[in-house]
Image (tube, rainbow, N blue to C red; front, side, top):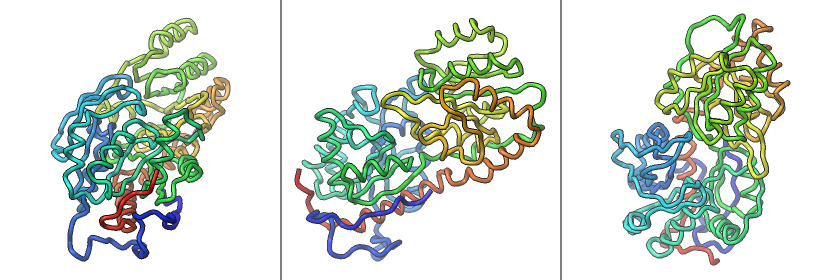
Length: 408
């Protein structure tokens, strides 16, 4: 995954000086001072997803992470567990929507007033309330410190006030941004981002997953699904596909508001003995879950206002040696690449036919499995941390010590 390209200094922006750091130059190398970063990400509540921060610290970044003390992931509340990460500060949140929540402002007030930050990295959408909250506190406590925002939004939306105003202000003053899909970066540029821009996958600890030495499936195919049980994840489409071919069985891992309805659908289709609903699965158990699948199904359905923004589960499957059959929707085609099959979304006939190919074409499973193992390294945490560090250096290299911020 590489850079989406950068744009020169924004005219009139006092963060940008006349001298721009040379490409690859580390502005902290001359005095051996460590880059100090305050990173804010509610999703850091998941222990495994703090791998990026651990690797950045190993690369010499003096990083502090503010994260949620408790958050819902995969349909179940996840409490923060330190797991030895003494750099992480769990903070109470108010609100449960990823873009409509705020942190308890008191810990943020104290942290932002530390006085020694080189960069604030907000792994939150630029139109979200959490970003508005941090920028308001930053204006009072450390307005000269440059900041980054993050986006996965791959639909060009015009938000109602005040979110449209919050987004415009956060983008026009940002030193840079990073996105997990290419379309999101294009949208940020169109909406006014003039700082650095990096295409960064969400990252997966690929070393945790290992392909099992086994023969290709024959006779019957065990299809796996991992994710929230909500309409746009397409489990209903998967059940309809299974009903078309009695050689297909499925294990469904996940919880959510559609659990009861999907159970009823499976029963009505006569699938009760071929589909097992396992309920919520903890992220730590996934390395043991994936090897039980022959194929992973990711039948996401686009709905108004939402497209699949990345597809971490596809990468985890690739690392575990499990090919995918996914909807050709949103960012999924880029993530699946040549390591799986794509079908039109919301099309159980096409999904059933694609799954059946793994039984009818003897070489297909092994070939796609090998493709996934060969390509999964680009999503490793090591790769993500290295790209993130380069973005940090470019963003800080453009900053002017003691500078202010652009006007509203």
